[in-house]
Image (tube, rainbow, N blue to C red; front, side, top):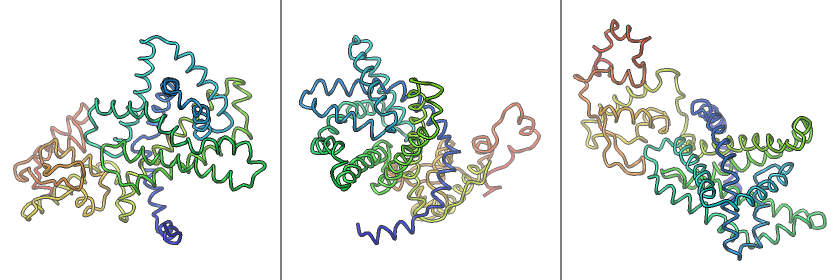
Length: 400
């Protein structure tokens, strides 16, 4: 890429809308709570995952020489240096004991490791507002292949650089800084590639490579900055070491896993919402009743598009005319489809290939089901208002 073009693209990048989108999605999608759930799942599955990878290396002696370098590289790349050695020692110790378990114990470990990747799959698909995830069997096969073949492929890809990395770590003090910079760039590129693959292939929806790359770059940069900040905090404010002593590695690791998942989820948000951010300004949610308002606008647009030759509009066309993001529009379209008020035509995996058409008769269709679904549900507190407010007498023709 031309450096001038790259700098020009950075200058035109919508930084302020991106920060606003991150803040909005973090709050509305409850990504903090999701990161907490993933932290718990990761903690449970960390040892099983490491055990499976260790067993694979044991089964293929050809990769035995790369095992130590690969394990050290993974931990040093993903965990702050202050606790990387302790974490690697604990994982190796636990994995060694777990490998002596029986068939039932190993099966439980495999189930725990698989549960982690299935949780990641569900979380990322929710960020992309995927309506239909992959079938469970297909997901298990894909992630089990990733779980088993991933360490081997990564070891093979690191084969040409493992010697340079291991030797370079000991020669940095005597060689020029170019070698250390080259090693850091290789590690950073591998990290970006891993996040890019996560964002591009895990969601069950097409994700363009530049968008996945942008999310992966954000996650990798955020991870590196977070590592340095956490290392600085641990060095300057040794609270955990003073309080927990030798046990301090555990709470620090839990905090780090949580921070890592927050960064990974924010990178996914950038990859998912980047098309809308690059398209231009979008309307921000207007608080309570926002989805009900969007539903009325969708119905009005589809009503006007009914007599045209195409008999409908795609989600992208609806989002462009309404100046809202397609991912925000997806739950509204899903609610209208469930009410049988609109229908899908030519439904493909790509949202651009699906047209939505008007099915409801505006003169005979009561507005009440839509109000119950997106505006005001019927419960004990609102039942009296529904009875005396004559809300059931409103029809679509009264509001469109």
